[in-house]
Amino acid sequence: MNHQTETLERPNDGDVEHDETAALIASDKVEGTTVYNKNGERLGQIENFMVGKRSGRVEYAVLSFGGILGIGKNHYPIPWDRLDYNIHLRGYVVDIDKDRLNDAPSYDSEKPPQFGADYAVGIRSYYGVPY
Image (cartoon, rainbow, N blue to C red):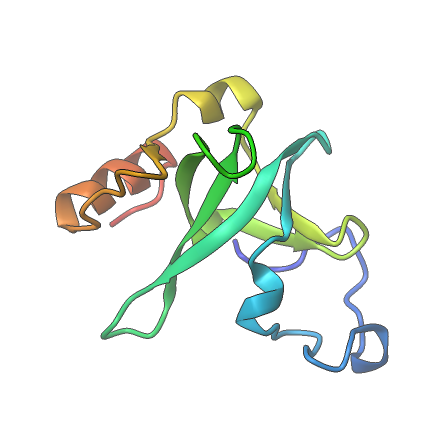
């Protein structure tokens, strides 16, 4: 996954802003981007993303929602390869409904987890992504 939705036309470089290309986007533009499910329901937004120090690959997008004024937000790490960018929504789409997302591995904003191998296996297993 992690490509543009196949049913949509791919933009050419003239269709995107100056700090991105048809295939690349600046990290500061990813943070804050809305995430939707396949039904077009807003699930939350990308708070940040986790990059493998050695691989340089984006491993997880951390979806956030809930809370008031940033307090009490829940954070849901989603494997990056489960997200597809939708040019019409100007956001990412993940194939999960709200109920299943509520049961997904998450953490409180004040107590981030240790993103070790065991945690990674649990997240990837939940989303059906091999580790």
